[in-house]
Length: 258
Image 1 (cartoon, helix red, strand yellow):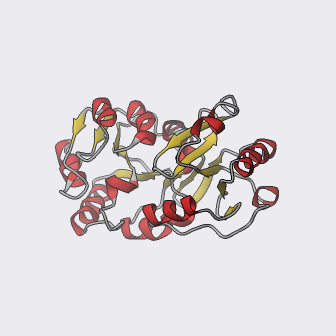
Image 2 (cartoon, helix red, strand yellow):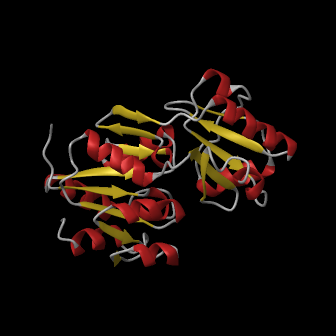
């Protein structure tokens, strides 16, 4: 097992990524220096594994917490999967059909969607991520670790009936990240640290949005991006610059990590 001086967790959208959904050269250099200085670098995202591949290559990072803590890989090996019961997925699908809305499904290395709506199209244009292939029976053939519910106004129609089974994060105006009850980036971090025997090293995290709040509340040193929500900044030990103005590098330097 490798020894590390500490572990640094990075959200992606609005944090590690710029407005073009790429990583600036100075951030790439900072990440390389962070590794050379003996720190484990981990992506912590609501995104799916397939949406992380190009970014991971660009960042040179091979460990990640995906789907808001529902799927975890360390150095290319899966170490945790949080499957939503198929009966619960089926019931969510029934609500979506009643409301003439749709749902996308995410497994370890596969994705699918129930149907197509204008809100779904807007959502994937907004996030600049690939639209999952049409597969209405996906959840019957694959384990589901996260669902994306595509709705602008019907949040409570999903949240109230399933509050005992699921946790919901609205991260865009068009969709709600939906995972197993009490699953979050924080639980994912805890599982990774425990599995890799890293519970005694200092931890740091950069984030900007609602689904980053559990993560920032868990690590030793929470860092909010300057473009982050006020609730995120309130949770932070340090507020760095925006993702467009060198916030990652500034934050790493503030804590003497690079």
